[in-house]
Amino acid sequence: MKTELLQRWTVEQSAELYGIRSWGRGYFDIAPNGEVVVRPSRRPDAVAVSLMSIVAGLRDRGLSLPVLLRFEDILRSRIALLNESFQAAIREAGYRGVYRGVYPVKVNQQQQVIERIAEFGRPYHFGFEVGSKAELIAVLAYQDDPEALLVCNGYKDEEFVDLALYGLRMGLKPVLVLDMPEELELILDRSERMGVRPCLGVRCKLTTRGTGHWSESSGDRGMYGLTVSQIVDVVDRLRARGALDMLRMLHFHIGSQVPNIRTFQDACREAARIYIGLVQEGAPMGYFNVGGGLAVDYDGSHTNYSCSSNYTLQEYATDIVEWIASYMEESGIEHPIIVSESGRAIVAHHSVLLFNVLGVTRFERTPPPEQLPERAPEALGRLYEVWRSLNLKNLQESFHDAVYYRDEIRAQFDHGLTDLRCRALADRWFWAIMVRINELLADTKRVPEELRGISAALADVYHGNFSVFQSLPDVWAIDQVFPIMPIHRLDEYPSRLGTISDITCDCDGKITRFVDMQDISPVLRLHDPDGRDYILGVFLTGAYQETLGDLHNLFGDTNVANIRVSESGQVEYVREFDGDTVADVLSYVEYNPVELVERVRGKAEQAVRLGLISPQDRRQIMDAYESGLRGYTYFER
Ligand SMILES: Cc1ncc(COP(=O)(O)O)c(C=O)c1O
Image 1 (tube, rainbow, N blue to C red):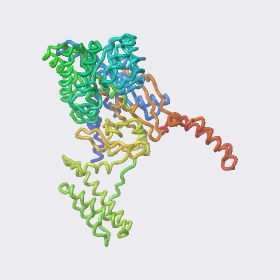
Image 2 (image 1 turned 45 degrees about the vertical axis):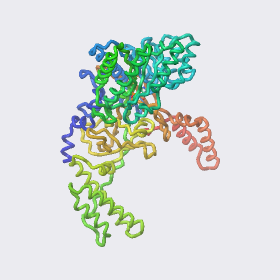
Image 3 (image 1 turned 120 degrees about the vertical axis):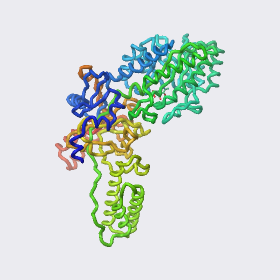
Image 4 (image 1 turned 90 degrees about the vertical axis):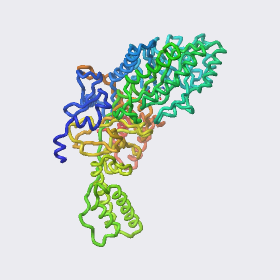
């Protein structure tokens, strides 16, 4: 059976197994030689480029794994797709306003990402959203399109407000969105002093709640924004100061990764009523900002599951345009400019983390003996019976019995009532039962909840050269699921089931949730190591991961390569960034590398004086120490 699979396995089966054609959205696929390829333009006639060949190119240039690849053309494609989807929806619906999207900087603040978004967004007057002073300071240097918006959310102090107003004076289009009512007086005072009249917005707290991890961002008791009564109060204060004409934008954000389109409908309806109310109060308004939340289909299932989305980008744009149009028309109000702050959907697809597998801890499957030994304790006899009588109809009962008798023998062993051999036999029968149950489960349609952990318990552990905490913090923090798969050997049957551990010494440094077409799987099908490099890719990692990552166990930033791929398959290594060196990460935690060298040199010299090492040894030790300081924090071959 296994040999047959080995011979018959095709790349088509790999594509189905890993779901690459669903979550890959045309950007990623598998070539007939079994390697993952990237095609940033998604045009079927464009030449696809193998990730393995990109890795080889990077290695030739001295950049080793782990490495984060950023495909600039995918970023371009995502920006075009978002803007063109809204433009198409606007044309189709005869909508009388335009779309002016902004990119929320918090989702990926890296300089090269911001620079490229400013460049690729220019044809669409695509702007930025900032949520802090630091983000504003970064964007002021890169935004130069007077038509594009600069939405200023977040808590604002005087410096923040002044900087935004300077942006206005330099010809930019900042909108200062009130996140707290107290910000109003500060903004009005600073604007008067500077002699400018900025656009203001209000972020409203909707009763509509998002779902999943970010649902706290919305709802009546949500942390951010103004309640309706606070908004009315803002209107009164603006009117009293003769500044109601500044109120131009209504903004809401119901949370990130909203998998169900219905949630947006409820939010838009509620926000539209508030918007209409503000127009009726005499505010000019003009901008309807639907915030972020546009979901990424990480598992490719196209459902309302939390790591998926039950709508396409085009459906999202079409629905938003149609809803807003219909609410405004009911009240005879002009169609506003539609603003969205989609971050995840813009940047997620463009980054891929690649790491090599350093080793595999295999699950040992030593079969138990056929016969029960003489004078075996009763519990061992019972366990043996469970093993012999196991079948598809008594899976759950056998599982319970096996756990019960295995634990009983362990307890007897702890009290000195059975010997070491008996305990070892109990373990062997127990695991033989688990292996058999797992095989039988493959033939059942619904795996009972309590048996779901068995496959993970039997799986091999693939040790990857990366840190979950540094490169995939959301896997650790919020159980985020990213598509993960080998980037080569996909024309071979992946005969092993594995989980992945990283190289931090932390029991949380692991991945045990994988994309599966039916559900989330605790194990991933992987290939038997064959002595050559085995490289895995974690896809759709461009959103939120880079700056949330931390230095656990002092594993620093990975190497990064910005790549461009032309339609003819030409690869341009645009920029490479060396990951942190050991000296870098040590200085982040307040060591001084020069002092470290001095201290070790002192120690080595003392060892020479004491006759423990020779001066030549000292030299060798110092060379190794200094080269370690200059080296990569990850495993180097
Ligand atoms: C105010 C605001 N806008 C936009 C976003 C981006 O959301 P997403 O990445 O889901 O598009 C966020 C992030 O949570 C946010 O807080």
